[in-house]
Image 1 (cartoon, rainbow, N blue to C red):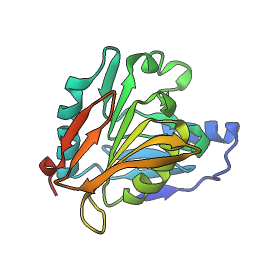
Image 2 (image 1 turned 180 degrees about the vertical axis):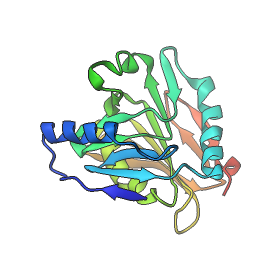
Image 3 (image 1 turned 90 degrees about the vertical axis):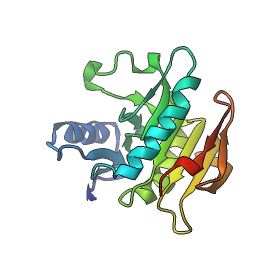
Image 4 (image 1 turned 120 degrees about the vertical axis):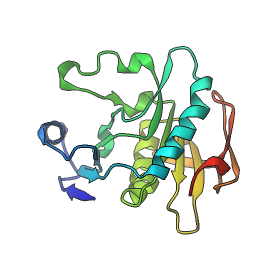
Length: 198
């Protein structure tokens, strides 16, 4: 992964300049380009097992979506308070939140409208998913953050975070691949993590 550094204490104008740089640069095709903590990060395309985990989660979530909600991959969300523009692996978001996206040059929704965010770690971004993004999602008030950490030192784990308060999450449930993880209302879903490839 490569990164382009920008001052973390970006004002509104500096944020606009950072987003403009992100939008106007010709990034390598297929790479995931995000702004995390005021730094533009470029990660290679995800590996096959990463994509299989995302596809598995997609199959679990689609049947549970409420009217007016949708599930997206590669939709950008803004976490301006943390100097961030994240592209989660999966996000459940109200359709209305994306209406008008692209107007005024803004092709993203605020993270605060997400109902659930799912991130699957890769070797190049594991720390960001565990620390910076967890903090950004909590500060934005995202009710549920599911971290599928395929690269944890102790072996692949799954952690469900929720009840954001003061920029921090509570750990609602955690386990290793193979342990069931239950998403609370409005999803009421038990995930068989034994289906995730390692």
